[in-house]
Image 1 (cartoon, rainbow, N blue to C red):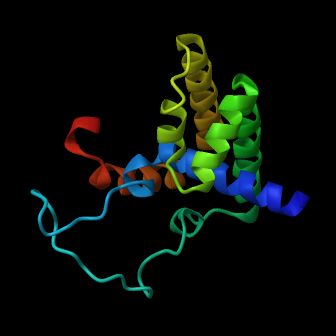
Image 2 (image 1 turned 45 degrees about the vertical axis):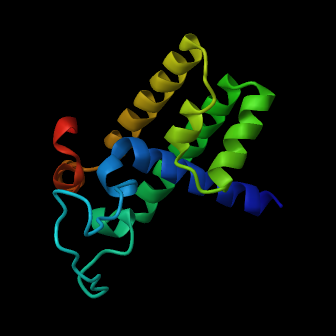
Length: 153
């Protein structure tokens, strides 16, 4: 039971981190032929695509653990801001596959809670960036830039 909880926290934490640190990669919508400004679809080639962000950034096991610890702490801090009902709704939405940011927005949180959560996310993002080497941070930024919509650059 504890392993499943830890695994879920890790997955949710990673999702939240990716949503805030690399929104263009983590939650970009797949291109469809009927949408304007789409790039031609290219088949995934497993031989030249990294399997994960850890592989793409060439993170060490120590960095992966540090980032997971930061994400678990962030998740705990965010959950502490929420009421039990909000926590339950948030958890159910994320487990159902909803983007954590969208799930939080759907809770209609009070302004002070939104500010507190934003502060928690920004602080943990800064902590994550401090774990990365300058080369890894640059690689991350290079991967995110082409995937962001033009209004977010």
